Image (cartoon, one colour):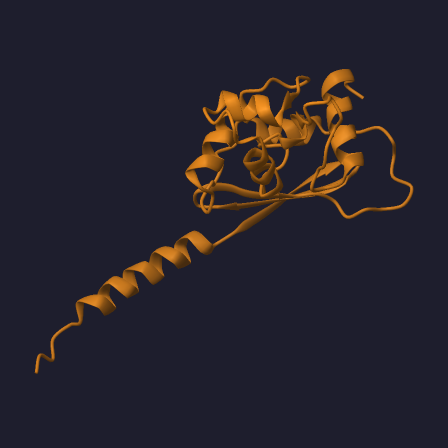
Length: 165
């Protein structure tokens, strides 16, 4: 019987150390006129963007320029996403502020011409809204469609980009 080091336990220990290293999260807050956004980051980059809690009496003007400046060139942690989602998100990040694209157009641009519904699913799973601007994706008929943070937020973000409001 071999009493030496078990190879699998050594690999498991290395994997545990790597998982612990990547699981450390830092949180920063960005104050806007709409409340405080929470940015969750790890060693691989920005992991998630959390919107402010709904609050009564918030101002109708959205001033998110400080948040956009912080997110524009942020390194993003895309771990946990499929290759399809990563490709769609990369294409979406190239859509300029103030422009919109339909789910079908985004699917075609990403190289998946028949995957409009899958693009919608990718938008729903986006944990990095604003950094990956899923608010710029609309339905083929020109209507806004859905948004994980609510249609009011989608409208506000688009108005901010279009009109600077």
